[in-house]
Length: 322
Picture (cartoon, rainbow, N blue to C red):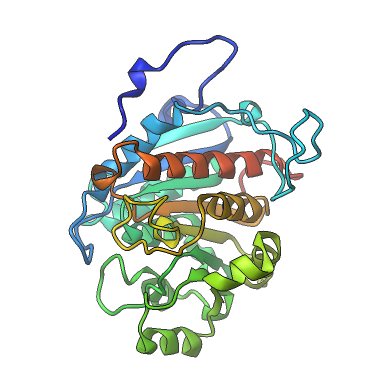
C-alpha cells in the first residue's frame, strides 16, 4: 500500500479533495454524499474489500478538486468527455460506512436512502459488487419500476444465489426492467454461454469491451443513457473496476489483461454522471489490501469519485434533491 496521506506536503494554493463533513453535521440539501458499503462476506473469491472505503477516502487527499474546462478556457485544450465543473462549488457530505452491509443489507439500504434524501448524487464506495444492491435500491426506493441501470463491468453478474456475482439478477428480481439495463465493457472469456443467454433473455443491452474502443466513450455513454433512462426514472451507475486492464487495476481479483484503460473508465464515469437522471454511482470490486505497492487501483477509484463530482458540478440543472 502507498504511504499515508499524513505525509503529504501542505500548500495553501493547492487545496486537497476529500475530508468532507459528516452528513449528520451538515444542514440543508447537499450536492453529493459519500457512503461506504464494505461488502465482502459473500464474495466468490477471498477478499478484504471492506478495507477499500477508508482507503479511497485517504487517497482522495492526494488530488486537487480542480478540473480543466472542456473548452480549453484555462489553456487545457482537453476533450469534452462529458460536462465538467469545479468541485469547490459543490456541497459534499459523508454518511460514513454501513456497519454490516452483508449481514444487515436493509440497514445499508436505509443508510443510502438517507443520503439520497439529502443530495442529488449518492456515491457508494464498495466493497465487492454485492454493494450494488443496497446502493441502487436505497436510491431508487419505490421508483424501481421506472429506474435504469448502467454497469461498467467485465461480467454479467447474473449468477444464482447471493454473492458479488449476482447483483444484477437480484435487482431484476426486485422489479428492475431488464430492457433498461445496459452492461458496458463485457469481455470474452470472463462469462459463460449460460449467463450470456440469461442476459439476452432479460432484454439487457450488452456493449462489448471492443465496442468501447471502436465506437468511443461518448457514443457508448449516450446509448447507455438513452436506454437506461427511457422511462424517465433514476439511473444507477455501477462501476465494477475489474472492467479495467489488470495492469491498472491489480487490486481487482477478476481483472483481466486487455480490459478498459484507466482513461476510458474515468471518461465513461464523467460522461454518464453528467446526465441529471443519474442519481447514484458505486465503485466496487477493489480489494485495497491486495493493491499494488503504489496503490494504483485505489487511486483510480478516488479519481473516479472526482470525475463523478466534476460531472455533477457541470450539470445545467442545480435544483435540490428530488
